[in-house]
Image 1: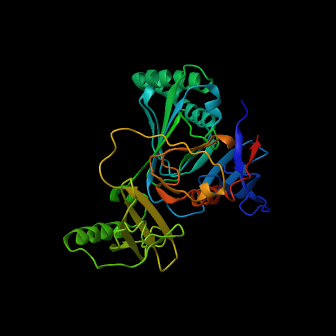
Image 2 (image 1 turned 120 degrees about the horizontal axis):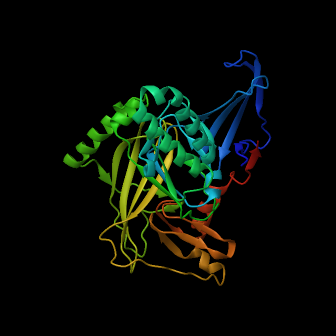
Image 3 (image 1 turned 120 degrees about the vertical axis):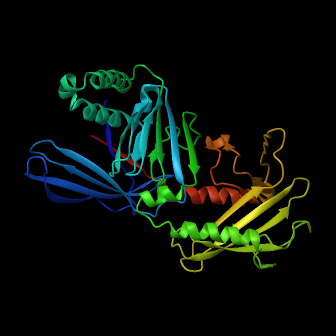
Length: 377
């Protein structure tokens, strides 16, 4: 099978890969290093560094991340059901470990980020495990036999046999990625879980955990001694949530100093509750950093979980329907069948706006991520 080498989606539209001569570490002849700034839709900005030596054939790819560390860690769970899943593009950060539970196999982080297809990663594992097998055959017979079994299963998986199996990535940096083959629709074979990293994981990545410790202390202080309350306005998604919605808003807001996820300076997290008529109360949280300008808004429903799920279908008859108020929870899917668009659970988070505002958020999410080019070897 042909393995895609890189994902090209130029950040500026006219940028080109930068190519320079480099010394090959294998044969000590001159090779070529290609550096490219790339944006992967629905993921992040990355820098791909690819080395190729035409003298000995040695190749090496490395990925660096152009943005800041993600707010949360990530766990990606892929069920490989058919051979086409082996061609999914995967980015594995230097802090990510990979697991194949069927083989009780775990590949620890190796302090090097890489990009490849799943087939390519399996081949790399096979090559690494096979390297010292001739020596193990005489020095560590039991280990040799166990690895031979794993190698046999890995070769079956790589050739599209013995399916299904699971490929799991656990990355505290949040910078790992598995391609969604369904493009704008939810991928039934890929489960994505975000989690709050521990202080130990943060320190293991080489970052200072002092800000996280301060945040925990501040949250404890808020519980013991509530901070200043008032009726300051909260702007979120263009909607002034301190104005009454059918005179049912609770106009008190709580302001909590919180470290910014981008610059780590202290910003302010404002919270207030709004009662939606004939529905329930919702909690609106709006963060603003006065130092770097970073903003973030989150909306959550309060109270108990409803006994039953709900499907709401709206047919647009005229422009007035765009003014309808909408609350989309962070667990809701959003489907527009006319254009075959499906936003899975968790996409956009919780949103309270009108239909027009919700469509604008979807457009903003996709804007600048329309072109992607796949280069084949």
